[in-house]
Amino acid sequence: MADTIRAGDCGVLPRELPAGSVDLVFTSPPYFNAKSYSTYASYESYLASMRRVIRLCRRVLSEGRFFVLNSLPILIARRNLGESSRRLAIPFDLHRLVTEEGFDFIDDIIWRKPEGAGWSSGRGRRFARDRNPLQYKAVPVTEYIMVYRKTTDKLIDWHLRHHPDREMVRRSRIPDGYEKTNVWDIPPASDPRHPAVFPLELAEKIVRYYSFIGDVVLDPFAGTGTVGLAAALLARRYVLFDAKPEYVAAARERIRAVVKIDRDDFPPHPV
Ligand SMILES: C[S@@+](CC[C@H](N)C(=O)[O-])C[C@H]1O[C@@H](n2cnc3c(N)ncnc32)[C@H](O)[C@@H]1O
Image 1 (tube, protein in one colour):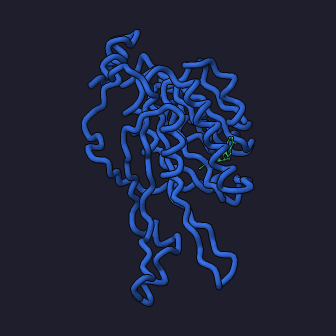
Image 2 (cartoon, helix red, strand yellow):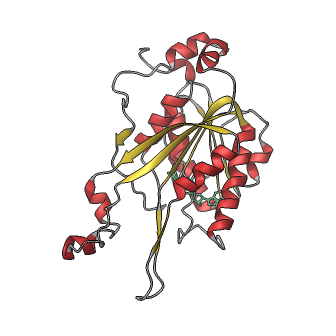
Image 3 (cartoon, protein in one colour):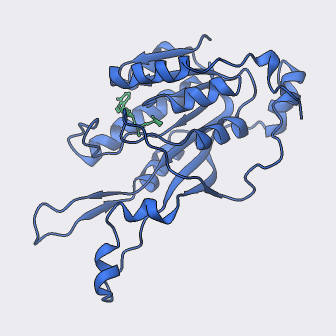
């Protein structure tokens, strides 16, 4: 499959992809209440829409391959001073949907940001000042990276044994310095073109750990294309969708700016 970046609704677009044509999905779904790009009438309709995308991803994902989801709890601001704000534990609701749609749960990876990144959310500031019991709110510095595998009776070894190119499997091996625990310390990223980009370092780790050189990586909610950029840099192919043409244009520009690494030259010094 050729590298693809398309503008449009990922509740529809992946239907054009052949079943089993993708080797890894890594995505960060829209925040339910993101001001600049979310238009859901209710949390229930948000979850229903996520279920449709998860189902489409399952269809296009090949046998026993990985589906990796980045999300975090979000705050629904109070409408007036007499009301409490409300927090939605989105990762836990998505977990239920993903497992109901035919994926096995593999790992919960915690992406930890430096403390300063959490204070900017505003949560915990009142407690820091007043210190009253019951007022305590933890300053959020983590996001979840939930790892699932399309349900299969095949062991991981089966993928290694049945890969059509033994040399590609050998060259996809992960060098020293990999993450050994499920807590990954990575600073957040920012980009003036998008309010919620994730760091290239995070996307690179996921692409390395859950795909082979030459594989196809799908991000249905691609934003500015961080997953596609990581795929290009690591000699994988990418399929990216985003609803907003301006983010798609930014993704094209970012990825075009790097030379796509040829799978036959990657890695430059085999490990
Ligand atoms: C959290 S952002 C992803 C950011 C991305 N990981 C990056 O690094 O730039 C979620 C994206 O989903 C997109 N989106 C929301 N609803 C969509 C839909 N139905 N189809 C495709 N994209 C959608 C938004 O435009 C937004 O760019």
